[in-house]
Length: 308
Image 1 (cartoon, rainbow, N blue to C red):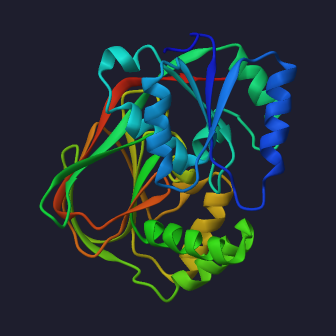
Image 2 (cartoon, rainbow, N blue to C red):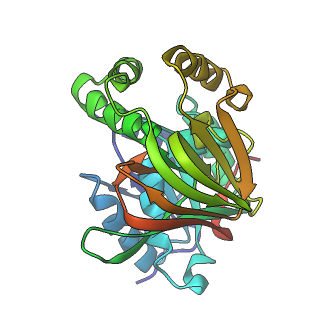
């Protein structure tokens, strides 16, 4: 039986050793008089299954308590439904992940759950864009994956993969980032790529490329997730000192000022070749697609709850 249209479905994706956050969140929801049902993911693979359950049980407001990867899973699950179903559902986020970049764009802060809930209760909806990467996997199957934030190809995807691996071992977000940057020195630093962006053809070695519908972890800081456009930051190989200079500019919000960064704005990126380059989608490793692939933008696909 379908639930009341005002009742929230809350998909809780816990972080290790953070069990008290659920009790705090439930207390805040109860204080605000929110009617809700909680489901909790047990693993990365369970998010889409639980999201499907919430959709098919008629929840019209679904709140993901998690990070960029969990939000990405929820979006891809929602996109499997017919447009009529999607248009009736509003998706919201309470940041609770290793990386919360898309939530941070809207000023949802992990340390201020009360403010986030107050904003979500007002149910202010904005249609947001989705990027989409279409590729072929090793089995020869045609695949696609949607993203709210960005696709990283090359070095940054490698670093993000290292960061997740070290974070699972160390538990510290800052320490895992520092160690990942250090280990980066011993990894491949450039990739042979053939790209088509607008009227430009790129055929050369590239360090990394970020294609963002959203802020792209600071690499596409001018991207707006409702503009109908993709921002692209293409970074050619540079010296090790310039790499650390670029990291400083990234951390201080001035990434596009680096001389090795070549920005574009487009609706289509065609990757004809990117040998050995890993691909990350919203912070999660996709792997290495086989052959050529395309990255496009689909305008105003998702109802997203934004601050007042």
